[in-house]
Image (cartoon, rainbow, N blue to C red; front, side):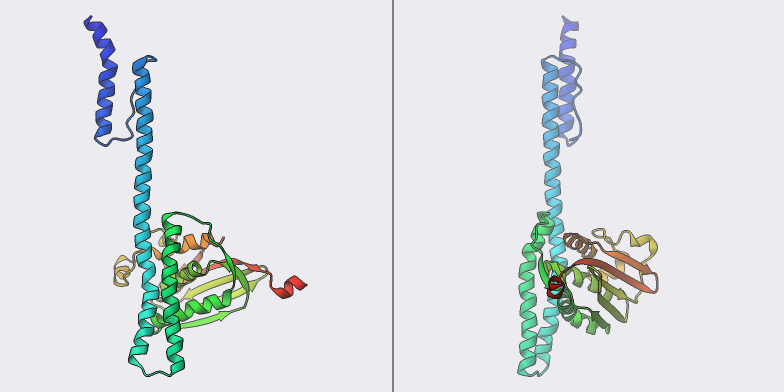
Length: 291
């Protein structure tokens, strides 16, 4: 009877030990199935339950990570337009301007405020909900780039950086607010490179439109070039802290670029500067359609 009892209860003791380990947080532990009887079925049921719970735990962890990523990204994206708003508001406060100039600066401030409102919803969808079904609409790419340059201008003047803009006209499809965020992130990184000037170019290349942003600053070491688009990665952590950076701008830029069916290409030489470029598909203009 003792032998029979031991034989019958041993699998139950093993299952009991497994459940205790699982209760302590070892969510990858599984019961050993050594028979095809009721105890074996119970072990299978436990393993199925454990697998389901482990899956749900991973989903919860992923949800928390996405929320944290959204909060950090949104805080990062608030900085550039807020700097623009503060810069233009300070100009209105400090200087005596004509009515036309006041109207122009007030319009820029209003546009940036409206962009922040729209951006909050779009970043929620992009980062937190991981959606990519944004509506891309036709836009004059040279006007979009010029608008981004106008937004970044107060920061450039504060840093004594000359922004040189040279673009050709073309129509492309884009999501305006997110695409402007992409440009501002790339320009913001160029401004922080220690450069004295930034060249921003947009040119037509057959059926595509190429955008490049080049600085002449400190450059990026070769060993860091492949890592700069990783979230929270910073080449120079001490300098990034001084600039109030978190290493999120380029990670977000990569996602926005992917949304526009393109990818960022980096070229950099330490001590000489960095160039980031990407291509967009052109839309046929009216003359091409008539031809």
